[in-house]
Length: 284
Ligand SMILES: Cc1cc2nc3c(=O)[nH]c(=O)nc-3n(C[C@H](O)[C@H](O)[C@H](O)COP(=O)(O)OP(=O)(O)OC[C@H]3O[C@@H](n4cnc5c(N)ncnc54)[C@H](O)[C@@H]3O)c2cc1C
Image (cartoon, rainbow, N blue to C red):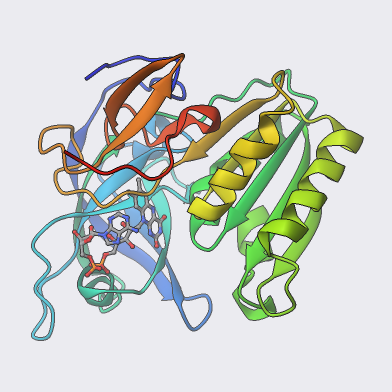
């Protein structure tokens, strides 16, 4: 295993701790996604960077008994220094239990974990390609780019208009948005190949970022092969247990300048170079 590699995003300072947080706000944003704002007794917003995640201890309920902590990217921070936000898809045992947490209830979280997106305020334009809950992971990046006055082009892919969550993604930032949908075929690999190449040719972004879809990741890897000067990064979602680099359940294979190596998504990632992800692998 490697701790720093040309495959990975930027390293973050290691200040991992466990926090008992109060639920300040918790509600549905649409039929599948919930928003939660937590308050710790420490200024965790200040130490958390774009792309990082926390391990959340979901509650045990009469119906659900989640054992492992669940990884969630930080969706935002504030308005107080002690507050951070998550946006999550209610899918299985842990997130269904989490959805029952009342406001003024408590939740334990561990983090911040993982590395961060590489972003330079000198970037003139960035292109972000988001699908599903990947937008939660990339929302802090949008905020960074907006603060640096970088132009933002967002390609947002969703099953249908109802799943898009454009307002939740941009959170007031100005961006040129291209929405594509499964419902009308505009999100197909073929259609997106054409769209992405046109946008890159016309706008020449300094960096391209993605999260939330393996299909989009592989498509961007192919497209960026023709644009070697553009930085490409992906925040990977991988099933994981400890989240701290010990259990090795989240390893993925990467090709780091010809050196094929297993890296831990929780520790060396979750942000990696798009070019260096190795697609499908059989583990020995
Ligand atoms: C770095 C990182 C950031 C993430 N950020 C977000 C986010 O911001 N919002 C969001 O909705 N989801 C996010 N996910 C996915 C989220 O962790 C899973 O949806 C969640 O763990 C599902 O838990 P569950 O108990 O409801 O589902 P179950 O299917 O019951 O979970 C069973 C086990 O599988 C693991 N698991 C299931 N799906 C995933 C997955 N896609 N990725 C990793 N582990 C999984 C769980 O942690 C749990 O241990 C992120 C995943 C990673 C790795």
